[in-house]
Image 1: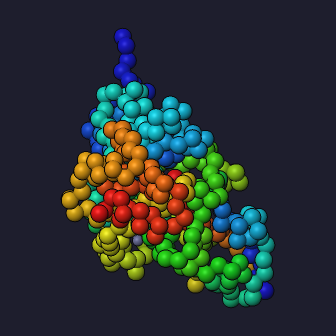
Image 2: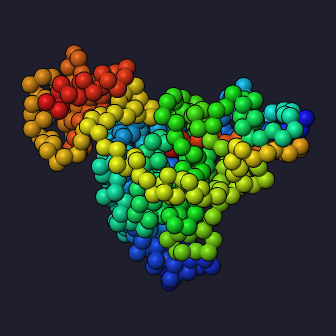
Length: 80
Length: 338
Ligand SMILES: [Zn+2]
């Protein structure tokens, strides 16, 4: 298993019970899709969800995650 | 000796007198004059940007005053359109620049005309659908576009530089057709984040106008409540329908009486096809036979037992107190588009 820290930016945190931090464990070889699945996010379908950031870069959901990663979950920022 | 209005900018190392002249010769369009747009427009006017086109379809409301710094209680009482109220207040601060207020709904019919004669377009919009439309129009015409968005305490900002970097769709991905997303209307928004994002947008606009080497090539994600700011890289997606394949589905999707809900209202706006046939004065005269009509120079208010709406000279109407878009469409067809 790998340990991942998740930070939710903005209202997308409601997918995590309005908390902005989560520490989760995923199987070895897990990808961004598995992370999304953990929070019932379906990329391209869940409107609240935008994308993932790791180490200062937007990453595609097929990216394999590493033990100790911090992943930021960004929403689609819609207001003005 | 009295120094000029822009002295503090002219002695700033990255602008100088030459840069100041360039700003004064520049043209910027701000789309959406809410919390972000009004604040950006104000800063660009302070900076002396020579021409500002301010576009918004809405009227100033009491709930706007919590975060939209330009507007006053008097604007609410007079039901002034935001674009016009902003033009009025900004021109009192800087009468040396040209400011054009456009009280229109930005849609596939008019967007290209609204943005193709400016140097930079700034995003002050309150919904993603129009942003995605703007993204397509800017890519098609190779116009630089500064994206900014806020909701709750969070915000994002990114320069969209056609031909050079990723576009809005590369950043946010496709917009799902079904369901709803959070808006300022559903989860709220706080004033500090709107001012932070607006400040980034204004600074990036100035840098773009000056062709500065400091133009930000990353996206910015912020949260004012969590004390979080992150600059991050976004790759241009070669498969992106907009900047990769130059397919403009929203821009080409023109349908009669398309309906959009408003941010902050229990109202729907109905926008007819722009075929040049709309005769505002004739419609207003006809409305007088069906109910109470009040007019000012920006719009007409119509009320009877069945309908309550504002009709604008560009042919669109905001239908109040309706539960859904279909009802709004029916009222529009019965009273306006006969
Ligand atoms: Zn793109």
